[in-house]
Image (tube, rainbow, N blue to C red):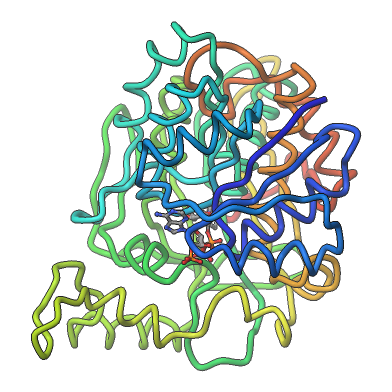
Length: 397
Ligand code: NDP
């Protein structure tokens, strides 16, 4: 059906490449391009498909990226580099006439702040060029947003309360490691908490609100309200929501490490001078922490992520819980990476497939919940992330 280019060769890029390569009838030609070309070559070697092309690219260099895109002429670019590159990649896509998909919203390097305003501002330009931009097509954001759209379409007349619950019950055997890019991950989990209630955002101290929640086949885990980017688009696209929150589980050991990292200044994003050299503390920390892509070897256990929703159906109050449990070991066996990269890369491939098949194709910039969830949900079941539904149960919240 068409050519695709993947930008970024980390844990998520690896899974996207594996999954895309499994569907040559849809993705007829594939290129992986990233800052370090050897990482792209290593992925291609692991997949064992020499037809996949590789290239070196700095995705912040718009003219270089435009040149690469004009030469290769892909239909779609899958951006699984870092959130810092979203805007330069979107600029290059506009100039080269290439459609766009990502898994994380733009974040400026100099400020730990993520919101959709920067990318939503591209709406008119993508529309004018007849190009599609699909935002946030990983697991969360991504599948959680599609679960919500699916619930709205099939199970509710009006949704009032949405709680997205993200549990990583896996054990990688390291005292401290992050499951995806450490810099992005630590910036995300150390910021203030925020949730939506009665038409406004309520801010909390980091990790201020927490409670034990039960996760099917996993058990009870302490869960903390943090801010997560899909809340911003979901409350806009589902305006009946009176409250929307995001919960993530953290172990005590993880939180203790995080507190120490912050207290000693290692989570800092402002450059400091060290022996005449400018370094950013959190970037240095990334260099000494385990590489998330290498955690898979000994990773045991499951991730369990889903949406707990309460609202009205046919005049009665209804509760609904939709979730996926993903095994770190099974993910590693299939793609050589752990479950967090897997749960992000599989939806990115399925979103790309939706675009290639013309099911999710309309000029402009869209969050995933603005497309028809049904064909995507069907593919989740087929391609490694099957989901379960529970009706009219206690949501535990
Ligand atoms: P990694 O850090 O493992 O990989 C990032 C890749 O991007 C690396 O190969 C890196 O190159 C490359 N890169 C960085 N800067 C540039 C640049 N300027 N030009 C070209 N390539 C660049 O991250 P992950 O694979 O863990 O995460 C990838 C993305 O997925 C992130 O945006 C993350 O936020 C998102 N994500 C989304 C989730 C979701 O559920 N929605 C969950 C988890 C992650 P190099 O190898 O040289 O460093």
